[in-house]
Amino acid sequence: MKLDIERYAARFKMPVVLYVDVYPYTWNGNELRFLCLKRRHDVALAGQWQAVSGKMAEGRSISESFLDQVMKKTGFAPTTILPLQRVTTYYSVECDRVMMVPAAAARIDSSSIEIDRTLHCEYAWKCVADAERLLPFQTQKTAVREISECLLANGGGEAGIVSI
Image (cartoon, rainbow, N blue to C red; front, side, top):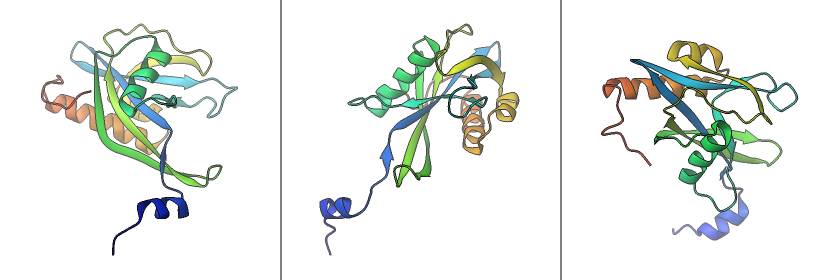
């Protein structure tokens, strides 16, 4: 039996990709460090630490959105973007549908950034262990660990890793 995709899609609410997560990293000598941003107290998720996260602009691809969000939240264009083989999924009550959030790692070759002050009040570059302690969600902790394992297993470089 052939599946009629259009009829199926009209009948059921399909998952949607509206947001992307990006885990900016840099090297401090031989130590890998991740950028953590603290949310302002007058915005959603008040006071929580997070990686770069944001809504995709209409008409932009996922890859373009990774770059857009890093530039918007840090003021820097990453030198490398490494898409992760993970997608966070969750159910949105407001939309009554499953949301999917693709993730990437992004190398930034500067430890001094200009954060988007409309959403964040401070930032910190943290080693892997400290980033895992600071980030509140298990998916974030796992992403940081997986990125560090991949980069460290590759001798600290991105050569041979699929990049955008």
